[in-house]
Length: 243
Image (tube, rainbow, N blue to C red; front, top):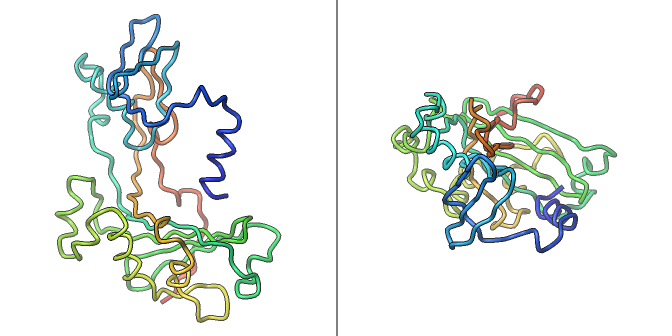
């Protein structure tokens, strides 16, 4: 399902007064009995436990690790930047015609993966309930990188591909749109997926992979990508090599 639909579903289960938007945690105070999270705008929230479920570059984790570093309790591996070896484009098309894309008629979700031949790309398609196709196009780097080293490793590629945002996503789309799809009448390419996806909903992201040693301390605990960022292809089966 699309992420916006999932957000709406989750929000309906939580009383509106319990949800606060536009808050960025900057300080965590743990006195042993209670924990307080202070936001950038001066507001603060107090409770028995603080759960940091705020993604790979978790602010809660960074604040927690600062405290542990001062106390000399942070393992060496937790001081390192998040490594990644893949750059990824992701998107989801609008509703598609079942006659043009017969694979959407299948009663269960279909997952198709392709590894590029003589190029450093692979790409995924998977059908969704709203008659759309979600897709991923992955660029596999020669070396493991992090935010600090990526640009120096990729200096021979176009500058537009080194940045993030709509312009960088378009540059990678242009580079990969000719890739053939294993569906339809044999003439479809990844460009057909890009053209059927709202341009502002195409994202270019890094696929980091790291499991942190420290998942909790005191009354703060980390959840999800904040403590174990895994590559999305970790549980995937085999690919079909294509030109």
